[in-house]
Image 1 (tube, helix red, strand yellow):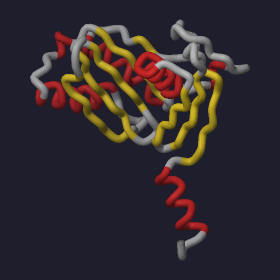
Image 2 (cartoon, rainbow, N blue to C red):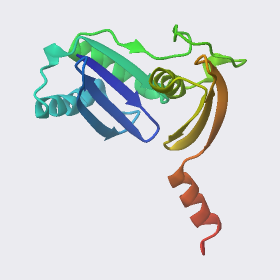
Image 3 (cartoon, rainbow, N blue to C red):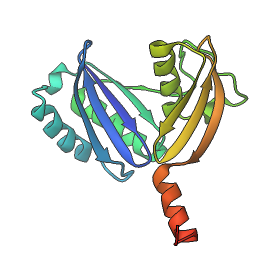
Length: 168
């Protein structure tokens, strides 16, 4: 089974896929100070609740937009699951072109969205991801990533409007 970890600015989502279906999808708040041991205590509880034994996890993929959290998430995989995780980053062979001047500046979340969107729906398309930030990414008909825009997420926008325009 494959452990998939998505460490976002607000939440970290971990999920296990057995090759056919998702066996569990769990969410914990992102905290760059959380240790691999703390992640393990939490993940072990989630795995147990889904009747998944740690020995069944044979691979892991990590996508993160929080570089400070990567070390301990990687250690979780190595120390507790005995797997070397694949870390999603622009330097991987994604199977599609990244047609921007500096590919290293594209977050793993946006590249993973591009891959999933193209595999599932083809192209061309605009992918919108509503998270802490709202991202708009453009994919051409061949699946190439053409770039995009980052805007404040819904909650950030609401908080800013409340602070700047309290009567709205």
